[in-house]
Image (cartoon, rainbow, N blue to C red; front, side, top):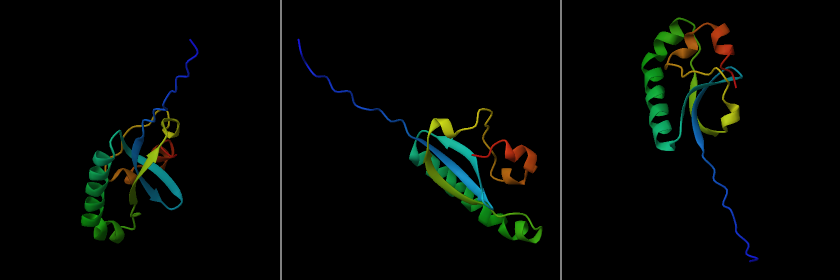
Length: 99
């Protein structure tokens, strides 16, 4: 038998909620579904908006959350999800989660 069998590439997209502080990008959380990632990102944005005045008054950075597709290889080995205000953790801990 000489039959050509085509294989479809299966792409499992991983969606990440990321935030920027300055020029650095950090992964806050990851999802296999865009809908769940988007909902979480919107919730994070609402929390930041609610506390924006407090952050600005205390000279803390105000992160910008986004939902983007990423590849498995972009996730650091020891990565762990960050809480909404995870950017307030020490920069030493955050640097380990940098993409």
